Image 1 (spheres, rainbow, N blue to C red):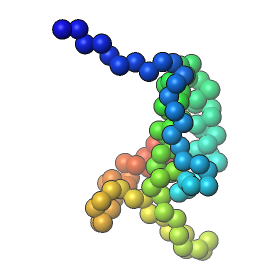
Image 2: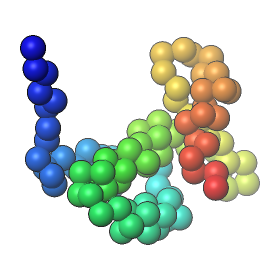
Image 3: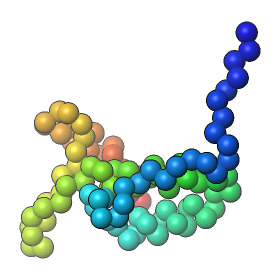
Length: 97
């Protein structure tokens, strides 16, 4: 039996990021890094995957509150209400560099 891998034609992956107004958080530094790195990725599908995936935590799981004097940020990590520190750290680790 031959198993033929499912292949998506090059350049056909969809744009998956929320509209800018619907994103949970925004970082100019992260957007610049995405643009710089994406420009170095020749494969259109891999480039789109990277552009969709890297900012996902910022786009969908960050809850900012507080004031300028006392800012507060919360990272949603799933259905556990305790929001484990380990999980939150793992989600934001790519942005720390």
